[in-house]
Structures are given as structure tokens and as C-alpha cells.
Amino acid sequence: MKDWYNAKQPHEQRIIMVLGIIVALALIYLIIWSPASEAYSQKMKRVEAQRTLLAWMQDTGQKINQLQNTGQRGQTSGAPLLSTVDNTIKASGLGQSMKRLEPQGNHKVQIWFESTDFNQLISSLAKLDSDHRIQVNSINIEKQQQPGLVNARLILIKGL
Image 1 (cartoon, rainbow, N blue to C red):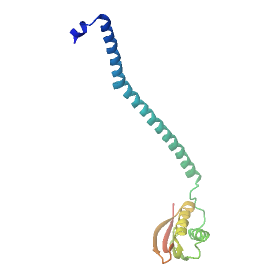
Image 2: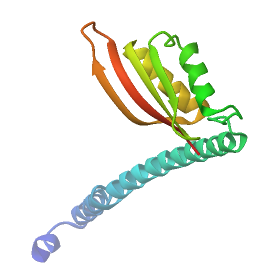
Image 3: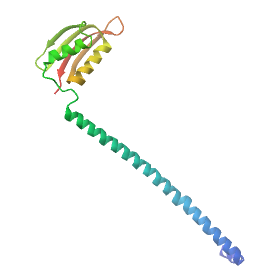
């Protein structure tokens, strides 16, 4: 290869030298610079996405702390459990299907429903949980002949 190069004219040797440098620079760009630049760009996009997520999480965390501190979820009123459950059930339109409501100590109440609308029942239970921190301890549901209607027996407890 050296003999071949030395056999060339000086201006051909310069052309070969310049082309060699151009090819070497192109290889360095394609093999080293371009992949490194692409990897850096992807890393920066990930960092930006992580920063956005962190900002959202911090904002959401502050909102959660504010809600917990102000007690917007389920502040229990001074009202007894039995009357709170009774009032909520009647307000939701399930008073007619509620057949029995019995206290079981200070923090539990048992309810029987006959031929009650399932969706209304679930909605009432969610309202009791979100507004008063009264939760289902146990539930027994039997479907009725008519679609959407159920018989249900529940035990509700007052959350702490």
C-alpha cells in the first residue's frame, strides 16, 4: 500500500490524503458523534418527562395534604351513626326499600333492603363513605326476578 501511494504524483498524493481525512471524519461522525448525540437527545427528553412528572406529583401531593388538613373528605359530624345512615339512605331514595336498620354498638349498624335498586344502593354506599367515612364491613346481595333489583343485608362501620 505504501509503494502504491509513493508511486503516485504529488498532487494525487494530496488528493488521496484529503479524501482519507474526509473519510476518517465521516467515519468518526457516523460511528461516534451521531449515536452519542442521539443518545444525549433521548436522555434529555426523558429528563424533561421526569421533571414534568415530578412537578405534577409535587402539586398533587400538596393538594392531597391540603385536603387532609382541611378535612374535606369525610369529616364525621357529631351525629350518631344510626341517624347519619338513616338520613343518607332516605335522601338517596332508598327509604321505601329499607326494611330494617339496627345499631350494633356505637360504630356498627346493620341494614336490610328488599327489592332495592342496585345502582342506587351502590351510589348511597359511596356517598356514605366519601361524605361520612362510613364503610361497608360486610354485604350479602341476592338478585331478584326483576332486572336491577336486589335484596341486600349490610353491616356498616364508622371509619376512624
